[in-house]
Structure formats: structure tokens, C-alpha cells
Length: 193
Image 1 (cartoon, rainbow, N blue to C red):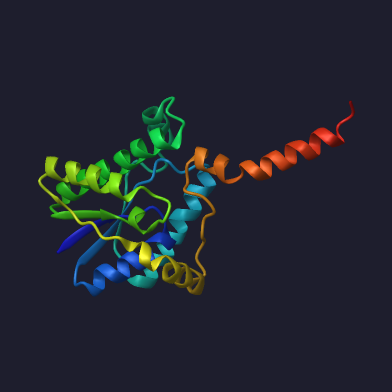
Image 2 (cartoon, rainbow, N blue to C red):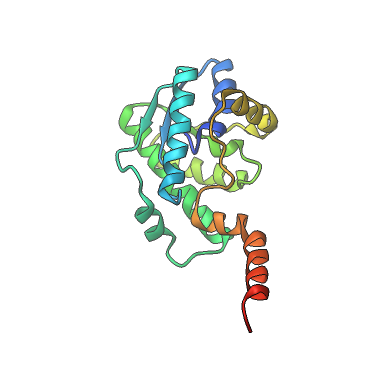
């Protein structure tokens, strides 16, 4: 089957591409991630995917909107809690992937978000299936989490950039919250009273 695979980043694509190819699918990647912040992070992830594309001979469609943080922020609005913002982020990316697959005549789509241990698979599966039905497509679900360690090893052996957080500004804040608190305490203790 031809599948348009939404790719959030190079490292997360390695194991899913391997599995899908082993299953005999014809895969094209699609990079659309307006959630990623800051721009340098977006750029590093795109560069890592370029390396993956070259190393795996994987065709990648780069969304024409480029760095779309304004799109993401407008859709998220004031929904800052992960239980509210993450579903919006999934929908933005899955919807655009389905639109692109339909426009290209590709009958199915999937996402490398299904590789992550941190993403909400049940929610994504339901959401993507609903989106697929609207575009007369198939959402190809596969739980790629079992390949988490293998994917990490593959990315290390290729020497590609591995990011320390999901990509959004809120995830970055959560990732570094403890470190920021330690810094705040240190600086408040060092400051004159």
C-alpha cells in the first residue's frame, strides 16, 4: 500500500520506515510540524530528516508553509494544559497530512508520532480514523513503540540530531521546569537582599 507518513523528526522516522518497508508498503515522508519552537529547533529537525531521507532513500514532501509557529499558536489559543493542547496539535498535523495524501492520490496515511512512548495513541488513532473517513482515506495504525530502543540506536549510529523534547514551547518549558526552578533558587540566593 502507498502510505504518506507524517514525520515529526528524523530519529522518530527510522523505526517506522523500517517496519513499514518490511511489510511491503511504499512510503513517502511528509514534514509538517508548525508546533516546533524555536526556529533553530525546527531547522535542526529538518536537517536531521534530510539526513534520514538521504540515508534511507526516503522521498520526503516538505510542507510549503515552512515554519508555521503562528498557525500552531493561533489554533492552540489559551489551551496550555497538555490534555487540551496536545489533541489540538495532533489534529493540526494529522488533518494536513490527510489533505496532502488526498491531493496526491495516496490512499493511506500514518504518523511517526505512533513511535513515541509519550503520545496518546488511543486519542490519535480515533482522531486520525475520523479524519481519514472525511477524506476517503485509510489511516494506517501501527504501534511502533516496541521499537523505541532500536530507533534510538539507529539514530545514534547515523549520528543524527536527537531532540530533548516534543517540540512545542510548552513541552520545552515542562522539560526544563526542574532545571529552571534550581536556577531560580540559585539566583535568588545569590542576589543581594
